[in-house]
Amino acid sequence: ILSILGKLDRIDLPKAIDFVARCRNFDGGFGAVPGAESHAGQIFCCVAALSIGNALHHVDENLLGWWLSERQCDSGGLNGRPEKQADVCYSWWILSSLSILGRTSWIDTDKLADFIMKCQDQE
Image (cartoon, rainbow, N blue to C red; front, side, top):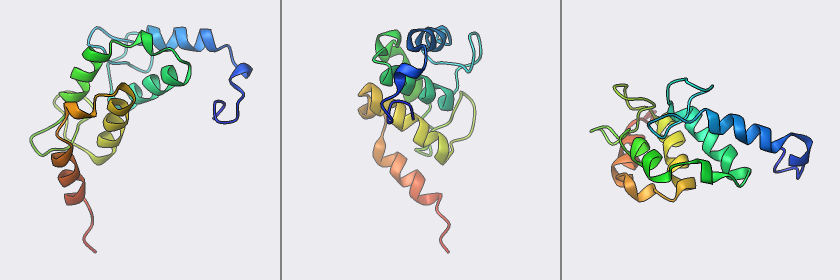
């Protein structure tokens, strides 16, 4: 929101970027705090924050792109963490993260679209 309002100067941006960068894990993902498990929703928040702060150099884009693309299940949907069920909300978090990284081609977006359409309530 501060970025949209043109008020990023209201926070200590380098300190915020440093904290987000310290949340990065060995697998390329990000947790909510340093040392926390990588999670798709948190990854989006961190990648988006780093993007807004012009600090994507803190992201290993290929390693993270791999981790995110590995979230695609046989159903075509995406899960938030390994061994979890696919969910439409995680599909958004992951596709958005891949988009920021320029890696949407790393998943089968047609299968993802089919998964999302099948999740709709037909009524």
